[in-house]
Length: 158
Image 1: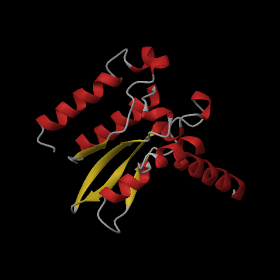
Image 2 (image 1 turned 30 degrees about the vertical axis):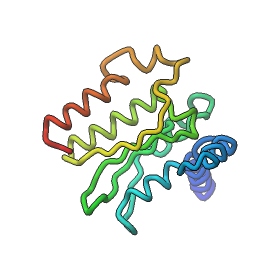
Image 3 (image 1 turned 120 degrees about the vertical axis):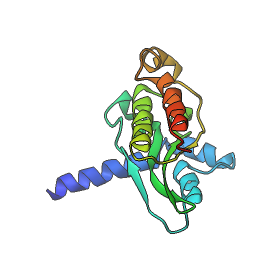
């Protein structure tokens, strides 16, 4: 049991690192904050952040897309619970893989189901072009993100 717990902790730690050290260093050299630092600055001071799907895409895409390249979760902003969706630009330039889209859509669904505002911290190169045929093909892919946002707005959810 301890071995399994240690393995889980190691996987979570690896996913939380984001992209490779070279990408993180380059990002910081440009004067940009890492994704979780951006989220921390957005949240009310001292408030918790419940990260969702932190191990998404583990074992996929040659393990090159930790956390599916996007951080999602629930946090307090100005005293109100919000869904936060933030691209990790250190992971393949913040581009969207098929699992990135699924994770993003899941966060939006949680926002709709719970009437929570959905905040986006975008730092993305768009779709990962070598896989664009898997990102755009049907109603549960990239374009659906915009449909969900329209649905949130239509329901009066900021």
